[in-house]
Length: 144
Length: 140
Picture (cartoon, rainbow over the protein chains, first blue to last red):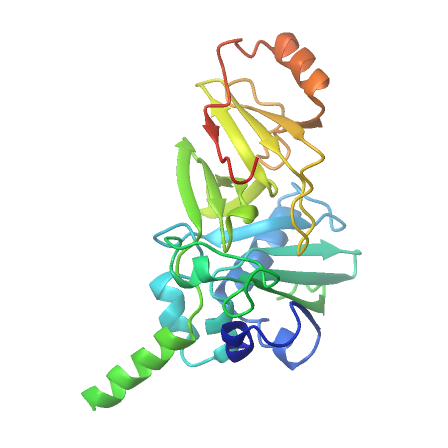
């Protein structure tokens, strides 16, 4: 995906659902935080089992993202985690299953840590904005 | 050994697409403006007691104003991955003093139209001097 983004090739918007790429996000720090937050809110009675969480950003890193230098080292050589970097996440619930959604835009702005512009691929392909949505599900389990 | 470590670090930096964010700015107290990857991601965020940041007004926030009692927000709604819909402008009020909910996620009045916003401001005592002092022209 990094090569596709750099050269402006492949799909502009990509969606990964319960596949190898989406599943690789199940245990990253922000997902563990949103999972802990959802169970905590339901256990405390502030949310029902059918409530979701939208736009969760978790613990903030130094410049407002949630990846930071800590994430850089925690991700190690995991190419998907390194490629996504900072991301917002969300949970929806049907009462039995939690659906996790991660959205990410690969842009020149995020590569340059906010000090450079971004552009759409229709303006210029190489380095143009490319979006990804990663979706995976897991059964609700309060015994975890 | 050091060469191996340095090589691994360089590979990690090369792989990494985003350590920081496109924009981050504390407004007042636990409230901040943040855009993760591009400016169109701009949201109004709240940092809760657990240290977790949650966006309480979703993208694309393009104007805000605040005093010690209220935050007022203008937003063009955005459905990821589409661009924001600039034909719609939603207005929000976040009460800071007389909160309507203990949950920050629910302590929001809106989305409102411009007329509804004006009426609500008078009703709950938002001062007429409170203006949208922070405007992102590119997002407007």
